[in-house]
Amino acid sequence: MNVLFLMTDQHRVDTLGCYGNPTVATPHLDRLAASGTRFDRFYTPTAICTPARASLLTGQAPFRHRLLANQERNVGYLEDLSDDVFTFPAALAERGYQLGLVGKWHGGTERNAASYGFAGPDLPGWHNPVDHPDYLAYLAERGLPGYRISEPIRGTTPNGNPGNLLAARLHQPVEATFEHYLATRAIEMLERFAADGRPFYLATHFFGPHLPYLLPDAYYDRYDPDRVPLPPSVAETFEGKPPVQRNYSAHWTFDTLPTEVSRKLIAVYWGYVTLIDEQIGRILTRMDELGLADETSVFFTADHGEFTGAHRLHDKGPAMYEDIYRIPGILRVPGGPPQTRNELVSLTDCTATILELAGADPTPATDSRSLLPLARGEHPDWPGELLAEFHGHHFPYPQRMILDDRYKLVVNPESVNELYDLHADPHELTNRYEDPELRAERRRLVRRLYDLLRERGDNFYHWMTPMYDIGELDHDPTLSAFEPEGPAAP
Image (cartoon, rainbow, N blue to C red):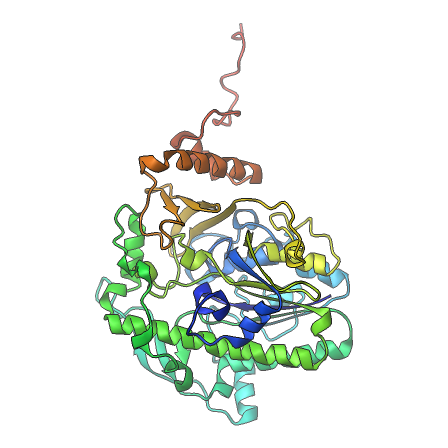
């Protein structure tokens, strides 16, 4: 079975028509969802690029593969996977697969995609590398103009300096955009792989719709800001929340931007989603023209979400809200029924799925579970909860999260913990960790998280042992033998 893996970066699930957005035009992804499985509760293992991508590559949770931060803000963590870590492309190569990756890598500093066997241009960095020689050659061959922007949107940081660039108008036709370039290179590789005849794994990783949103006029102005609703959680007060969230809001300058600018940013973000959808449509159309649809499984997902003003935040960070942890997840397997699934599944589960599609052993993908039974319409036993973790971005900041059908618990060791009732409070505005009405749910989730962390071997549980109500202990939390039971030695 061939595998076509389509991935975006920092993509809100609520920007897609197939996930209920009535305004944003995403016909190609909507059509993919209508012909396959749309996972309604699909999550990232961690809402930050490099660790999430490393989890996809290895099938391991971040605490296990230990690549915990993006290079650009790394504060002492590993910057590359260890040489002995299992990765799925090695298993596919052993089975004769052609391997290709076009687009964002962001999976380490010394080791690039080619280090893991992928063909394709080496495109480093976190955002479109518009000075890359291959992209410049693409423009020159077609007589297309180079990159130029105007009308930058920035807020003001707490010290009075200009904030990060959030959006700008791009002075290029769509054919010259980096997104069009990526789709073109992916189509060229798809054609080469098809001509070869061997099975293939081809990934196309778009750098967007990650901010800054840099778009040509047709997409920059595609959606009317006056018709764009602000996220309900813009009402965030941070009362009863970890103080770091207020700090991040200041860092991302939300309160320094007028409301009309916040609406414009969302409108431009939507335009970015439409631009990428059109490029994905080009790839899917060419796959069909090459007669590959009946022998190719297609994934679409993202590494994590984006705030775009939700909770008065932008980008992502140390706040485990649905906006950045719940992501789109679509899988079309030939012969599988069109359906929507509500199981709690993860980006990490893609790894075992890819291995099973290739006829390889999924066991080494330690924290991954194949989605194929779900995509085939089966009803296997499936875990009723999901774990996620975070380790910091601008500074170390460890968090763990457990999510079930209704409740979400977040443990913040340096601050207050969080508990949200997603049925009563889907926008996560009210932290109910100290609410006596939810004492039983809190105790249940704390203990369940504790047990699952111990089972995994995630040593975060050691902090929880003395600090929270985890019930009776069945082990020595001191990790010592200083107090043996029985008679004292003579």
